[in-house]
Amino acid sequence: MTKIAIIEDDQVINQMYRMKFEAAGFSVATASDGESGVKMAEKFKPNIILLDLQMPHMNGAEALEIIRKSSWGSRTPVIILTNLGEEEAPKTLRALGIHSYIVKAELTPSQVVARVQEALEPTA
Image 1 (cartoon, helix red, strand yellow):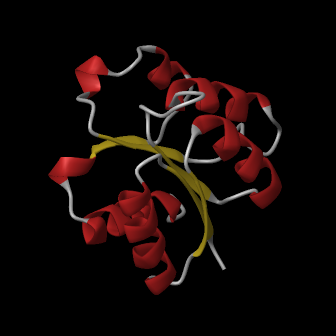
Image 2 (tube, helix red, strand yellow):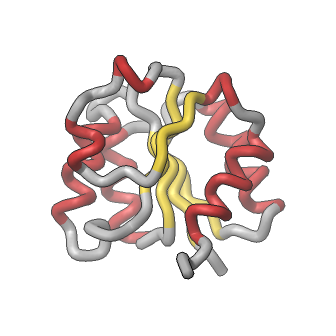
């Protein structure tokens, strides 16, 4: 079963995506801030991570920096899921190797699931 980690501080959004991804056949683990998200991801070792940027304790860019330093997280696809416009996002994100950048308000949850499934497809 494909494992996805959702690191998002808004509990309503967090649970909505949990239900969507579980219905799509994913094994889901969630965290509500960057710090607990890094710890959860280290134990869960997801196939892909959905990561919010604006969170308490540690923002998404800081969490991603830590994830990228670990052997399991250095190649794990990460999709940024935020309400920050891409031009407002930290410039370090691209250097940290994100797969894609999604503004929450622009896609439905079903479209986000489809994007994640596309990201997991092996490239020819």
